[in-house]
Image 1 (cartoon, rainbow, N blue to C red):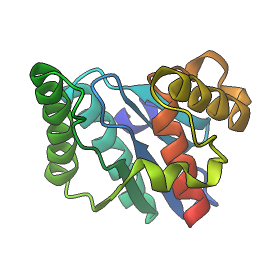
Image 2: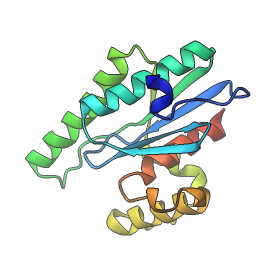
Image 3: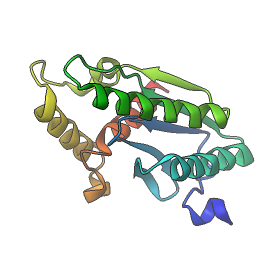
Length: 165
């Protein structure tokens, strides 16, 4: 029931499910199902925990390997104290969700998951974020308006994981 109502059926020919997570306060995550690539924005611990618990259960029932990549993040010196605290809190919540679900995960620095995207070297801040969104749209045009500034990094981290496998 619950697994299928959340859209977490996975095709019979799949052996590996890649989950990509952008742990920012306005971040998101992505994985692939029978309905294609699913993208979700971060809306809180309870919702994200429930979705990932269902995903893990679906993988276990079908004996598929679940591989999780989360962006390795650090507070920036230009962040205010409250912004740095919120940023760290959110990353900690993601780590707690993954650990509570006993999911193995790998932290990937942005430089590593962005490496194969041919990113212009001088892009930073909002122009970089817009460029990453466009790159995600180019890679996953079928997702249309689901690719946002919030979900694009999780989607690109998922894409990095798929390429790595």
